Length: 307
Ligand SMILES: C[S@@+](CC[C@H](N)C(=O)[O-])C[C@H]1O[C@@H](n2cnc3c(N)ncnc32)[C@H](O)[C@@H]1O
Image 1 (tube, protein in one colour):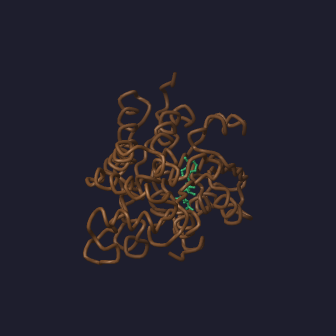
Image 2: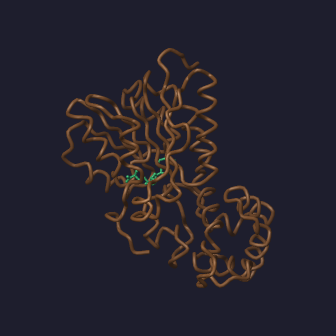
Image 3: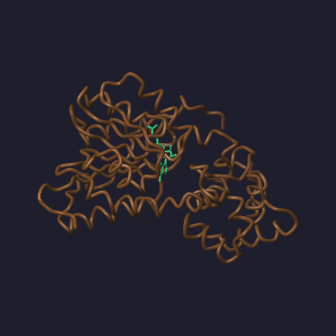
């Protein structure tokens, strides 16, 4: 992949703005500011008295967001932080509550398109996959350290890969010869374990898709971070505040759906999207990344206190 930052098109942008209605003077937390695509459109709705707080774990994306947001009217605070720590970030910024909280999960095209980051099975690179380069374990550390059973579980539970046992066995056999340190070697091992040619166009999805997804989720503890954000969110949403989550696979979407339903049962949320909002035909055609996107929005009720 050779996409640069400019190629990242924010998904479901119109729908996010329509359903979260960022308005003049409001405070918005974009918990995954990325390259600043959503943030820019939101900032344009906040006016000079608004406040936009943007978080990202990836320093280089954050630098791009800073450029994207140059010259906007509202005050902008960009912080390198994991959204699971939103309580700490908001406390440090002296913010008690926000009117809109947006989380657009997964990785950006800049991360996917940089072979040096190791996210893509389409190009050769080091098997890294850390969104936050301060994290200890790279994908190669997990691949070379975990036992066969743990590897199989990781691949199965993070990506529903039915051939997880076969893939884990092949990885463990291959690493006995030599440490597995590159994306292309992992692709070759997975393809061989599945008995498919990675270059063949017969199957709609690349044979290594699920293994790469599973590793990325594990390296970045993506589901753990999302669960923490969802658990903390009601405390930091002002009454009437809107929480929007864009997810890209069923494990993420399930966490969001369950959290919203629990919030409704507890009297904390009203759910604004009965069903997840999907990209329309035009967007699906022009931005392939949007095809798996699901947007859900909940609104913080006025009365209920969170203990
Ligand atoms: C899909 S991109 C967001 C794109 C952004 N909405 C835009 O329009 O440019 C997801 C971003 O979230 C960041 N990210 C993922 N998990 C995170 C986490 N737990 N905490 C903070 N940032 C995270 C990634 O580094 C990436 O930059």
